[in-house]
Image 1 (cartoon, rainbow, N blue to C red):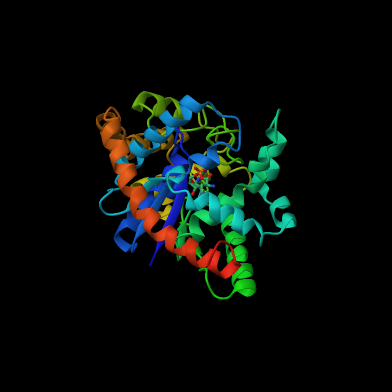
Image 2 (image 1 turned 90 degrees about the vertical axis):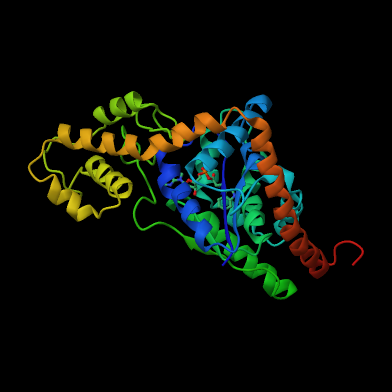
Length: 329
Ligand code: TYM
């Protein structure tokens, strides 16, 4: 089974990214043949960015992923812009992508509404590049959080349309969303997902947060006026989110968490969640501190990954070009 997923380069990866995606990437290394993970710097330029910061962010994200358990010898970890086949395939796939489908993408609507200056054509084409990322490797499975569902459905549609028009060439990938933790919510606004942009600073736990910061954010997490550590009922979004987080980081089911905290106050419960998150994230933060200074090693890992990725993607591109009548043939 070929696994592919992508992640935006930022030094501020949060608990939602970790639980919804990074944790699955690490597990995928066992099942993937191969497991391919891409740091999507070309997607990062669809909204305003600083060129120097972007380079730094790629290194930050690489170090976070390796610190979390990705082993560049057991998976293919690379930077999107190092493999030019992604951009070429993006253009080729745009020929079989409906404008109307792109117009319906929630992420495009949200991001373009938030954009104060330029709403770039790149932001509109974002899902086509994302489709190219996956289809270039004929991946079978795409592990992501809930917010990427629509993008994965679209890439399936693009693959189908391509195959209908040009013959069986591309693979329709399956979406893989975790049963628990697919949508971690902002601690301050538990009806909104935890997010790098548009989220609240106090409601977002970062992978690299120090224990004191995590404790503080958990202490001020929004709950409700009740006192029961239960996940269903009116206005229980805040508590439900904390139960879900604890369930993942402790690897226990949500019912037993509810039983364990029956009769306990919210203060004690939040304290236990904070402690569990600190324990869960600390090894990654500590390894990150060791790995991040050696940029040569990070670049070497990315370069080796890009070479392996290119070998796969260039084969698909040759087939796609051939099927579409592009180039000499
Ligand atoms: P990005 O970088 O925004 O997010 C990386 C992964 O984290 C998941 N995620 C969450 N999971 C649970 N709760 C949350 N609050 C939460 N927030 C984010 C996302 O679902 C994602 O899996 N468009 C993608 C990057 C991408 C990609 C790809 C993904 C580019 N090409 C090809 C899969 C396949 C994105 O912006 O991810």
